[in-house]
Length: 259
Image 1 (cartoon, one colour):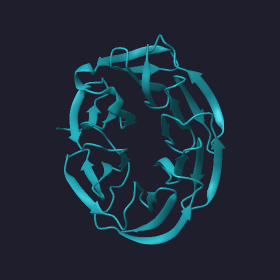
Image 2 (cartoon, helix red, strand yellow):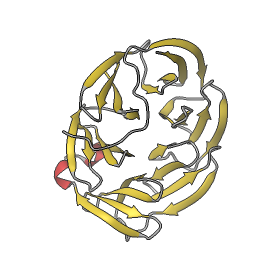
Image 3 (tube, rainbow, N blue to C red):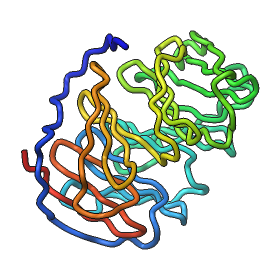
Image 4 (cartoon, rainbow, N blue to C red):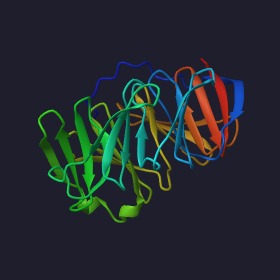
């Protein structure tokens, strides 16, 4: 498979070492965790709280929400995105987790929005469970630019848990299969076989995910794979060029990345 994308990030060093910096506990067990492009950490708690921590492990901001977000993506840290399936609405948050805007998904875009993520700065990618299609919507013009059926790819809708755009590609997490990679037109390019995943993320040229106690990497240009052992067991492992965050229940362990 050939990937025609351009990434302006340095690849992560395969021989990096980790130095433990800090451990801290949050109020309760963590439902999900993510990092923004500058490397700050975000955790979503069972009580509908989202917290943001700096690369030094300092609490920067906290917000209490009416419900848990179905999807939370901090993006670049300046314009954060959340999607809530129950209300079929999406929100943009500021860097201190303050709500900037909240919009109900227009049924003219999708009859039964199941998941949604940003696609660039002015578009949404929506998975519509009415016909199991992926739609790309231009938010400025309110026009559906792309619509592609993926119904033949879906065996159990309850196992489709995450959607993410990265470098003009769409990635869908199917816990029965792995990660479905779609191009910008919504056509399947590849399936990364990795059953039972909770999440995935990206660093530089690579997609990575946690499986069997290791981080597994796949190069977006060459499809080459590699694995990396972790300093300790965890439920979430998030990697940046400066930090490794390992999370277990309500505890966060921070490590410095040493090339």
